[in-house]
Image (cartoon, rainbow, N blue to C red):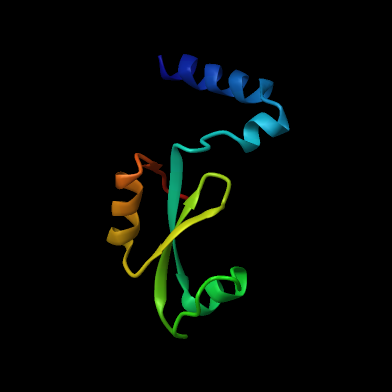
Length: 91
């Protein structure tokens, strides 16, 4: 049964256009990424300044757009839960 499911997923992925693939998971999937405050400030200079040397946790949409910045992983995950977002792991 798993082989059939994997084959179906492969065929579905092969039929998506680049634009459709880019929007996959939009509004429903997010991921949490730990980062240093300096990295966040460099990536998002328009955001309020954060004290250097801090570990922060960003919640990002499937397309990489930032949703929220939290002081803990649990805080970022709680925000995802409150907004009905399914979190996924990235490796």
